Image (tube, rainbow, N blue to C red):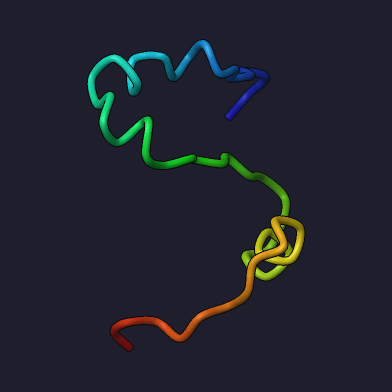
Length: 52
């Protein structure tokens, strides 16, 4: 992956192409954390998957 760093400006296309989704959802890009750590830091709670 080299030294390339992305910023919010790199994802403006998403809001332009999908304004309804962009207004209704928040995408959080995470690196270096396990899924459990992400849920904990976002003060979420684990849920049982809809399908196993």
